[in-house]
Image 1: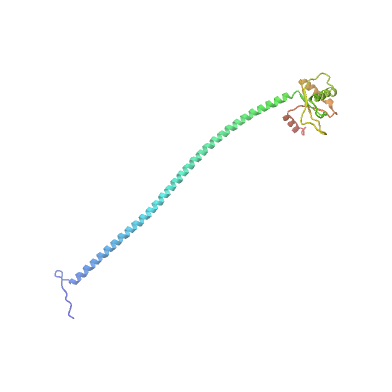
Image 2: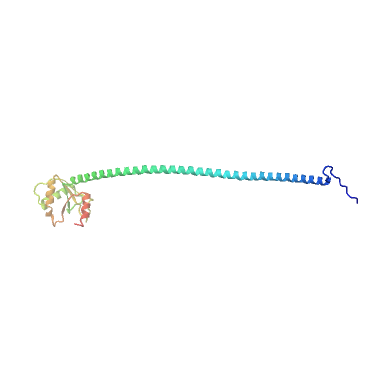
Length: 231
């Protein structure tokens, strides 16, 4: 086989085959460079898109958190306002209660004074009264009969000869029935001196099972009942 003929480059004296191979390599390198550049740009675009997606998601979550925080803050402010209003209302209610308590105390003092006056007036209205206990009672006894029995006691038992005027005399309590104790008789005299004279002669009734007592008010009777054991 004859030897291959090699053409020489007229300028540099290099083989023409070597120059063609270098150009091809350069073209390949340029192609690879363009390919890698395009790939790198694509990766950059993908990375930018990924970062943007992450940032958008993060911003969305941050916006949601911000709204939630704002809502919580608004709720706290509203709750604080309600709390302040309730505190103010409580203070007003407390002042109102104190005012009412002061009024009640004043009214209580006034009521106590009125009660004392009523007790005094009731006691004064009873100062001419006496209560006779132990005098027999007849069925359907009228007030006139009761008064006659009292007059008999005054004359026969107490030996009061002078005229003692009785304003009224009547039984107190529920009507007596068979085998029950006779009801007391409330006697009101026209004068306080008559009542005093009757009480002074009450000792003459000893041993007769008839008793004469002052006509005390209910409050005085309760108090005397409480003090009786100590007596």
